[in-house]
Length: 449
Length: 126
Image 1 (cartoon, rainbow over the protein chains, first blue to last red):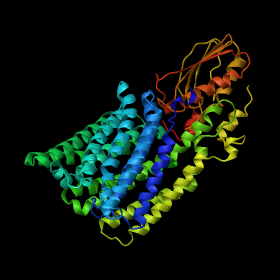
Image 2 (cartoon, rainbow over the protein chains, first blue to last red; image 1 turned 45 degrees about the horizontal axis):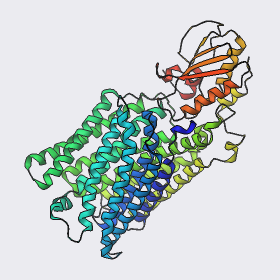
Image 3 (cartoon, rainbow over the protein chains, first blue to last red; image 1 turned 180 degrees about the horizontal axis):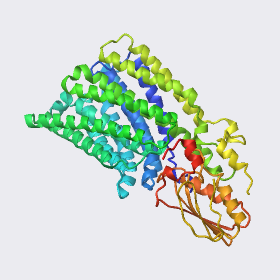
Image 4 (cartoon, chains in turn brown, green; image 1 turned 60 degrees about the horizontal axis):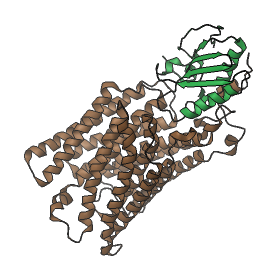
């Protein structure tokens, strides 16, 4: 079957993810959320969950639905399962948002019961997708580095979900269960780190380790460096999360020390990753980079300051944590996501529309479906906006934040327009006059000797 | 760029965009196959599979063509389409009734297998 390698629902995941991203940015622009406020304020919780579940998780899950069968050569167990997962996730997220609005006073307080209901729906949706994605991964031998990264990320996703559900039950109940009190009062950093770095970060790194060498013609085998990145990150984060959780209920200086040690290992792993990804860019055979790789480099450049502020946040969380979370979510994760969408959307479109025509006449290249000169300024504006807003958060200047967020929103909307154009190529490409590379045109017109 | 055109020879060399041609009794068929495969592109790189060095071996004769080829990366999403494209374009050549395409991962493809022309196009230095 020709389209056996195509994920049926990936584009739907991407579309839903982008809508949620716009909503989250809209909240920042309208002043309903501000990252330097407490993370547990209801409006910030809405924006954070729109970003983490609505945008980044749906983006990652959509990409994994396409990417995992490709790297494992095993199909997903159930394509309809991916659709069911998406519906449950979106319905759960909607319930959670309404539950947070109840906490905010915008809805009657009794509606906070929607928090555990939404949390359960989200949990079910995630578990359905985890099953779909994990089955091909565990069936494949040997397990390559990207697959190891992805399996680790799914493990942290399960952990994040369990902690998140405890929060939803705690906040949703009229009287929070006493057993959950230590988690509700001090467990948020563990939830944030397990979700942002464990689930989203590991997935981004794993997918990047497959896609970036492929697009740049760089060595895919990362050798000891890749193993070092995975081992250090996984050990560090596991140590931090597990000892951190135990430390909440059974406070102990040894556990506290292990928690700090986990953070130091985590930061070291991220530094090794930055060094290795720099090596990857330097060792590429394709000297002229396409825009998706250039934009990915911009996102990775913002990752370095995120590590620095993250390290500083170990000692002074209140000063450094908002800027760290912001640059990690909007700079690295979202930036990398947008940059790879700029390649994946035309690629999937090519497979959908032109793959069947290969060998039957002229077909365009994937690159013919995009106009880089038009998209490049918007990537630059987006990343500049992230850098400026991170600085504003760091220096605690709130006055310009909404204006810069508005510029970021415009850039994202412009990039979405580019994705739309890639998805809906003009008739010249679809019919008889494709913009072929000179190389292909020359060969087609070349008479057999 | 020169491709080997050696009748019934059985040389195998995969470097720099060259492909092993085996048991081809008709020189014109040889060239027709090569020209036809030049029209099939890897959509991501946007370059034809011959100059990319993705075609490792062509074995033609008695109305049958066997192609041994690879992809730029294992699990390439476009693999099925590229293989179908090869089969389709070769099917249009007169005198060919049977086409067999085998995708192999050993030896693994690397940019060094590209033709000089493709290397120049991508700026590949080594």
